[in-house]
Length: 358
Image 1 (cartoon, one colour):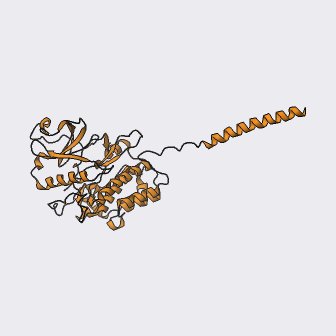
Image 2: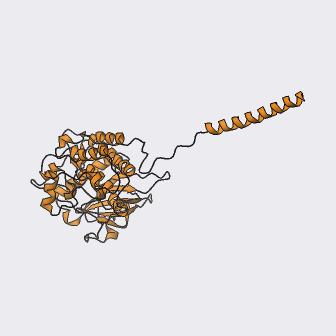
Image 3: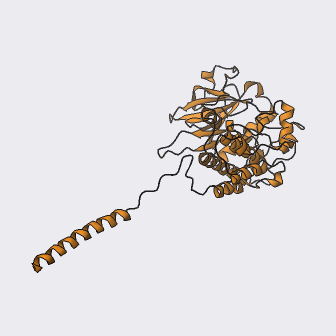
């Protein structure tokens, strides 16, 4: 099951294309619900995405709707249920929140998410070419924080890529929050916390078929082996590589089978060898460890990956911008005032003594 375009489309997503015609007019899609359609935002391989308004509250939301031709497919219905439940139960600043669910007027399931202004990380990258080291690390640390929350609940994403990461517009302090999108092919691990993770899929995925996006598939996904949290580590490693270099590790590899083979057997170029900006050896080593072919050789958790990145950067990071300059200490001003006053008093005292001597 390959997902080249199966993403949660948002404003700024360059892959957004017109959705397939629905069985009812778009304006009537949510008739009888609490929502009114504003417009279509985009589409994915399995779902269409709309901007809508809550009729009573007046706030804008995003609604993901299963495509009409998949409405009777048990596998896609089950995946839609799992994604909605996962995002509704996982409350974290770097994850999209699901606030409601229901069925369209033609019987298709949908779920409602919070609405943000901004663009996908892919659109950001394409507009800028590459991202400065400090900023790229800060963004990936936000990505790892969201993944860590999902992993702690027993959920792995399995499709981490720039299209599935949303970068919000700067807030009042100039910080840009990152949100992980599209848990459409997420997996619930055995033994997951039932209070935080949704019920696993009722049906098994197609056997013998890689599940994910070709350029971001981990070696174990290519080989149809068991996925784990380290699968998301590999995808995140590719995202960081691409942010720093402006290209993915196997940019020059053409052909689907050749690309799959590259993930399994081809060593990626060292980031510093292809990046248009300086990359030090420590950061090179961190990224290549995240991209190790054997899951056991990668970071074993999102938290460990983030800690390694923090250790590689000596100065603190406060988001996706450069840290504020430290204010100049006031002590130097106080010392100057004391020196001036002291000099004036000393001059007055000398003048007085000289006057008396005369």
